[in-house]
Image 1 (cartoon, rainbow, N blue to C red):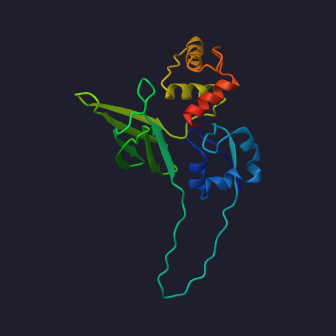
Image 2 (image 1 turned 180 degrees about the vertical axis):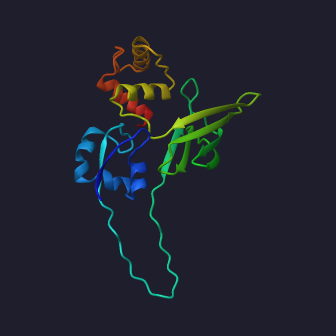
Image 3 (image 1 turned 30 degrees about the vertical axis):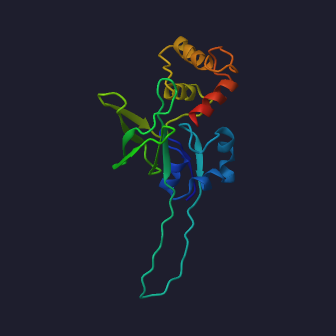
Length: 213
């Protein structure tokens, strides 16, 4: 039976589609979800309380001969986790060994020449732990990062701006003054941004560009 699903924290169309049996793009492009597309620029960045229309599942019938073995392939779209590691000067931390723990799975690898970690992950995964080993000094240092998946709010939201700033290494503090100083610090890095301490449209666009979401 078709229904209206209210988005909960940590959900996106990939996880909702996985749970309900639909490809996320199928749900995103439904006419009934036109208002959602107008409000959110990405199917993977929703806000708690957003409404998603879920249609009835259609049953597909397939003919097959009896007394023979038949193979049916279940379609699914895993998601890609992409995390970039930069040093204090903004340079890529390439060749860093990492361990990724997610949904009971363990992956090991190295960041590429641009500092990226890229791994296929289950669409309904909500958190991950990344441990990297920094061997640039004589004494290797282990760094651990807890990543909350699907919980990034839209870029125009105040908490969406805050999350992106902190993900880019700019602490936002606890007060409104701290938050304004964080925005000013970001704006001060770019000649084409006016340093106002306010997340205007141009600042949000640059923040989204650098954050890649």
